[in-house]
Length: 286
Image (cartoon, rainbow, N blue to C red):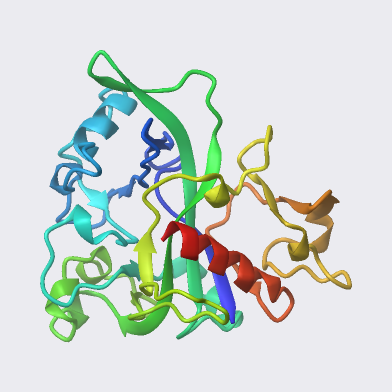
C-alpha cells in the first residue's frame, strides 16, 4: 500500500499566513488563493466552521490584506459541511500536475491513501478580531485524508462526463493539460486492522497532539514520527527524503524534511507499522 503525504493550504508564498487552530480546538485548513486559475468559490462562500466565519478569519489574520470576497483554489475539498452540495458528493482532490510523474513512478493509484498536512498556528479572539497567539508555535499538522477510490480525467473538455456534483472543482474549470485529473474518495476507508467503519475521505476538525507532525521545540519542517518509521537497512521508506535525514530519538524517529516539496510517498512494504499508526489516528480522530 502507498501512503502519500501531501502539503496543502496556505503557505509562505500563497496566503502567507498559517491556517488557524481556534481556542476551542477546532481547526481548518485555509485553501490556496486562486491566482490566474478559474474559480467560482470565495472565502465568503464557505459556511461557518464550528461557528467561525472563514471570510472574517482570513481577513483578520491577514490584517485586511485578504478579503472575504477573494476567490480560492478549493482543493482538497474534504468537509461536506463547508459548502452546499449536490446529491452524490464525495471528498475530492485534484492531482498536482507537477507531482503527477512522481506519484506514478511510485505506484500511486486506486487504493492509495493521501494524508493531507499543512501549516497551522493557534489563534485567539480579542475585541472581536482574530489574532495569532503571541509566541505560539508554527506547526505541520495532519488535517485530512482521502483513499483513492476513483481517478477521473479533468479539464473543461471533461466537464460533461463528470458527475454533476464535481463540476465546481477547479480541476474541471481549468485546462491544465493531459495530467489534469481528480481523485475521488472511496466509500469507506480500507486499512488492514481497522476496527471501525470510517469514510474513505474526510477532514479532522479538532486538533489533537496525535495529528501534530512537528517535533517539540523545533521548526515546523522537523517531524517526530514513531520509531518504526526509521529507515531499515539504510533505505528510507519516504520518497524525496534519504536515510541520512532520519535520526533515532528515544521512542521516536526525527525526520528533517526538505523545505519545499508537495508530495512524498511512503511505502508500507518498507514500513508496515505505518498502517497501525494511521488506524490509531483515524479511529480516534475521524
